[in-house]
Length: 161
Image (cartoon, rainbow, N blue to C red; front, side, top):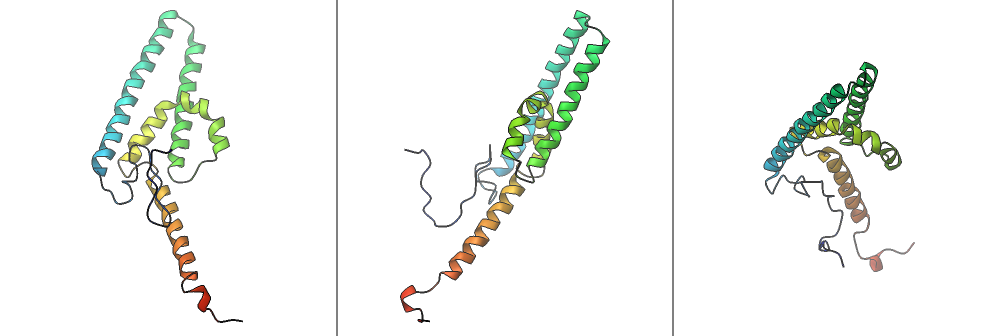
């Protein structure tokens, strides 16, 4: 048995977005506060993560691992963060390929700082992914109304050909 109630209205239903549910559709249910909370939470997590990365870097400096390893680690985190930011930002406007997303999961985990910053910046404008979900929902509504318009009338009263 499912926890979600069955939809009572025919036609397409909006897909929920993480932290927002379906409030993105009509901006109800403290939508503005949720956006502010997601932006503030993402920035706070990004700041805490940057502090942890700094502590890790200081640990490498104390261990005197050498400048080559320091450059490689910093470069890896910078590159992964930039790539993760770009991929996450792109996923807000078009549906990502599931296989490619799965193959980049490790890179996205290393570049988690970029993901957090992307969420924070996108939350300043709209719910992350709202534009994509809105476009898909409006297209589904338009298709449903076209299908409904074609099926109007009583099928038994149609003229015989």
